[in-house]
Image 1 (cartoon, rainbow, N blue to C red):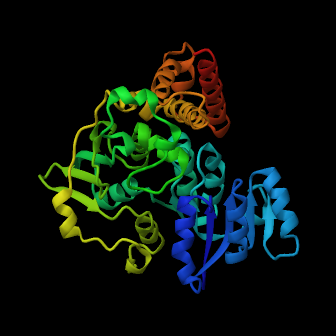
Image 2 (image 1 turned 30 degrees about the vertical axis):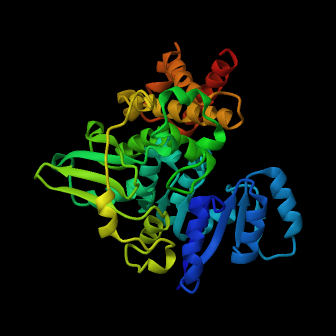
Image 3 (image 1 turned 90 degrees about the horizontal axis):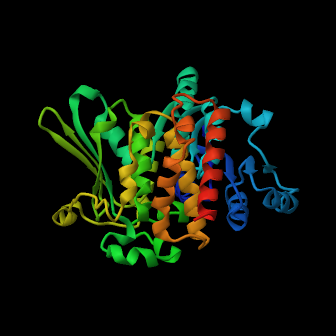
Length: 390
């Protein structure tokens, strides 16, 4: 019997990589549902090529255009996930790849009727892990993180407990500005920040990589996903992006996971439970033994990348992470629109953290979905106010 697949965020980089893996094995997989926000040309291509039973389009204007274009087709076009039919379908695998806080509720919804969630939506973990974890436990849904760092930590720490582990290093390339002089940071343009030297990613995550906010968010995510103390996580620069996590064990052993800079590797292994010959899916045919001579590691320059200093107990254990995530989304959006400078992102975050109301929103331990959105809304409004009065 074919496995039923849902891909939330099918037109983004994770979604398109997932479809590139699955398209070669449609005899074993049934792509039942795809979703996108507003990528009109990609939505059209995916409906024609994969013929999903359902396509959810969040953007109302794009939804109306698509439904008019495909009104005689078998694919049912929806404008919301809150549909009785969808809630009745039992999926084998849901790939959660919606960008931003918009992915929170759909991921929780699909966790209720999926055997396995492949999780690439950071915000669901950062803002609502306590909710998702309980839903998955109640519905016997397994979670596999597919960001390369968390996939690697998951593989390296299976069958180990907190007392076995001394240190977990989350690696980062350093982004496009690793070797740039700090004096030049005030002149960085959005077009430069979105050019990642190793990975092909969307604009938002590329900017996060350039500030190293992606590593801050990944550290928070790792703390929530895995049962290890927050003080065991550390960020380290690895410009080659070939080692994705390093674990130091108390028994004197060190383990690391190597793979090429291709998201299809963690995705395909998660889909196929590590039982796949992946060579035909990869563009690169590089040799590990040749690459190993060029592997290097270095500490983070906190003057260049001060965002890494924001990690604290409030951020790890309380709802400060929700504030951080929301503020950053706003600031990255404003930077991409050329409304603020690159080196304004960190000072604006600090100003939010110093606000008299910050603690009131940041101290909650297990907020409800309604409270998460309230914290998110305050954070966004406060950030925009700070930008306006800057």
